[in-house]
Length: 156
Image (tube, rainbow, N blue to C red):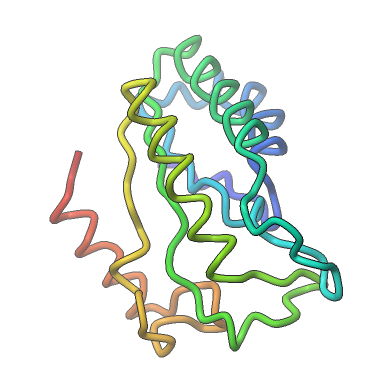
């Protein structure tokens, strides 16, 4: 297992970075935690339409699926986890909202269903329990244990 997460990366960033990282690692599965950074808006910006651009989401996922296929890997997409919006008001100049994160779930799930890709809904394990989040966005060790229990229960 290799964790290639780069803080702040969007689906577009990940889809650009991933092709160069896979050949040496030869993974059988590419697990992408998709979209939470795509849901962020700069602090002080108007939310406008709370839905992230579905075309942007689809393009990033299309590119990642093609990359995984070229390298003989299975793509699995993990949707956004619940977040404590009251504690993420200004996270490194970005603002994360539940409305925008929730708006990602449907297009992510739809894309996965349409493309026969496994989708892991990560929202429920942490829902309503801000104590499982260090900063309102990232899980504590106990939050990680809850996510692990959830993944074990739904293993795809």
